Image (cartoon, rainbow, N blue to C red):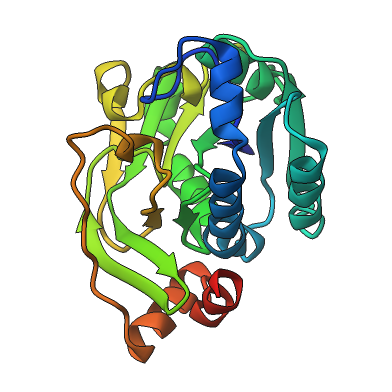
Length: 266
C-alpha cells in the first residue's frame, strides 16, 4: 500500500496557523525571518530528518510543501538537507487556502485508484525508526475495518516532548492523544479527502480511529517558534536534561543523536 508523508516547511498558507496575519505579505515576512528560519532548519536537521532516513521500511514518499516565495538561500539549504533522502520531494506552491492546497498536493502524488496511507509530519518533530513499518502492519491488521470505511485514523499516543540546545537534549515522556505527530489516515481508492482535511485533534469526530500506546512513537519538538506557542497564554515548559543513558535511548528509538544536536546548536 502506498504511504505518503506530508510536511509543510514554512508554507505561507491562507489559514492553517494559530498566529494570524492581516496580509499574506506579513505572513511571508514572518515565516522567512532569518532567526525563525535558522531555528527551523536546526530542528529539521537534528530532529525531523534522522528518523525518516533510518526507517526500517523505506517504502514511503515524503512531500515537503514550500512556498514559491521562499528565498533562494533557504530553498537551496532545504534541497541540500534532503539530498540524501530519496523519498523526499519538494513541492512549491503559491499562497492559497491551507486545506485545499494540502489536499491537492497529496492527491497529485497518489494513485487514486489504490488505497493509501497518509501521515502528517511537522518539521520539528520526529517519529520512531519503525513508524512506517508499524503503520503498514497496523493497516494490515485492521483490513476488515478499512474495507468498511472511506477513512480510518491511526494515532500513536505515547512519546516524548523534547527541546534541543547547545548542551544536548532536554526531554520527558508524555502521553497525548491526537497530537498530530505519529498520526495517520487510511484513505480508500477515489476518496479525495486527505489527512490534511481534518484538524489532528478532531480526527475521531469524522472517522473511526485506532489508537496505540504500547511504545513511544514520536518526539515532539519544543521550541520558541512553535506556532502553538506564540500566543500570550502559553507558559514555558521546563524539561529535564537527558543523561548519557537517556540520550542513548532516544538515539536508538528515533536516530536523534545528541552529539549531532550539540554540533548544530553550538
